[in-house]
Length: 177
Image (cartoon, rainbow, N blue to C red; front, side):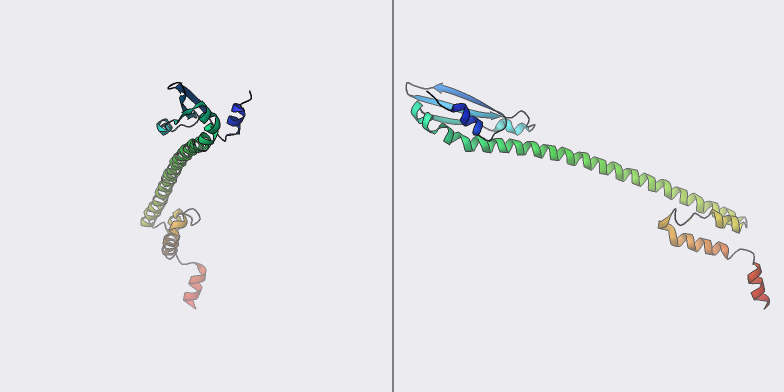
């Protein structure tokens, strides 16, 4: 007697293990429960999926067992795979979110340090200007390339300081002419 039972199971598109329980209820009828377990699925909701239960005589079950279980068991398998993929995607999103937050925090800290350096340089220029050291103050003003967010302020400050320089020979000649 050839049943092809295992060949038919092998043809099913499932991932996991099938647990089949067969119970005889009376002289002719059986209750068969089929439960798919997928240990790779980390979602505990999988434990709420009930087994597929079939009732019938041995002839009924021989004739319709695989026709009745294949589609529901394949759908359950696909559901568990989707659940696991969802959990993995969710974990990946959490990691990326944490990485993005860490990156943003790092960028913010770097920006704060950079802003502090800018303020220190401008304060030094102010101090030198107060001491009438205009050329030294001009050189103390930070470079535009280092602080592109303050381009206009730096240009304005340098112009103000260069206007305070002692007249040079070229300006002196223009004034005398």
